[in-house]
View 1: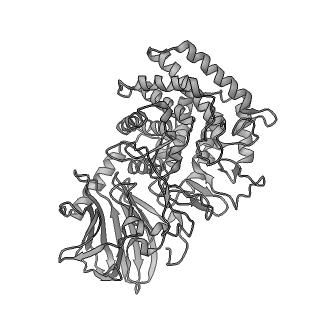
View 2: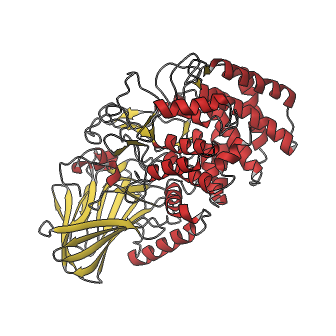
View 3: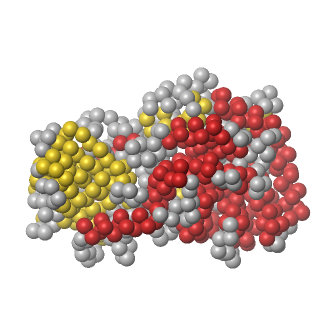
Length: 607
């Protein structure tokens, strides 16, 4: 349990959510991050990126109760989190969840139930709501049945039988829990200028929420040996997906650092095109066709318009302007500034996203997803654009904020775009100038093999003319660019294992220092580790792949959640949390390990 003043750990947090927004809860049952009413809305609890005065809500045993043990876990295959405190006086559970949204979009509930298990335990709660990412202290209004907090457009109502008193803009309450007793706390966000909604019955909402998640999880199709990590990852992905738009956020947080104190803090509460095919494979391979269809429809809506204006990142509903700015009043996670809102990477030109989009749409067609009458015309326009612009420089999928280059992975994904268009004509009889497309595909392939391959290193390199490696090159055989038994592919995998792997964990690339001291660098990128698992499966090195997969599973937190990165020297997770890309990688690798034709094998046959 983290004491006041002790450094935070990303892996200390658990997730609850309702597919509109989410909350992060520390081990000591403190809600330290909560954005309402949407994932990308302002936070009303922002202690994760600052201090308690920036907003939090804690329920725990009274300071006079000695905590002998603290355990937590999800209640079965659900997103209902239970934290169990055992004290000298007895034991008590704090049950946290967000029920599915009401029909009205403008209402969101967070419910906490304190349940006595043994003995009589004295409890306390401390609540400090701060709107505007911890910057605005709301007005509080106490009535007999509840307390409301409001400022500007935001209003919160907290209803509980516990008597709460205000002290220095913080609500505090003390109460005793006996065996079998349940004490509810129901927090509701609504528009301050709207009508106050009815309060939900906490126990009834708990029963319905658990039932919904259990029924949803029961649909999962996966080898039983991999069920636990895959189901938890799928629940996480579902929680990160907006129920109305189908868009999936990269994570529920902003500015959790990739490297402490280095300024590598970004807002991930948006949707990335680079995730397209990986996500479709993860969902369809696991039996979630409805979710895959919703994701594909989001893709089509987001990319509508001029192909020249395709962005790497969009808002949840396909919003295009994600202006980046800094919040100077927040000290950052463990003092790691700046705290950024918005993401300027939406302005970047990334050529790889054309390939991801085309591959994802082709994959949906191959797997008989419901047709969209506009889809092929969109794809043809994308190919016509690439015919004129494929030789231009761009940024990499890692969104470096440096000079534009001819990144090898990006060029390969352009090749993928043209290749999938050709296959669509050949396999489905769609109209297209397939002769010129074949010629274009060959020109791109030849240039990549000439300029993106370093003969001295016997490996494909990060960008044309470089000698640096990049973990994204592990995807070359998976997308079908070259077969897995090609000597250039084997040389690339061997070089990456030798140079970018530390204690089994895969870094995206080397940093500017040639020594690449792992203790001083950012963390290893977890999805890259799963890409190496997939490459080893394609190579037929099943035992080695399984051992690496198990190692990656071992760094999940106690709730089965993964951030963006793991630091193999400092033994901690880094980056935004929980990270969709990491969990998508886990799901696909599990299917690759358990199936004769998993996502990696299937995708490699498309080329």
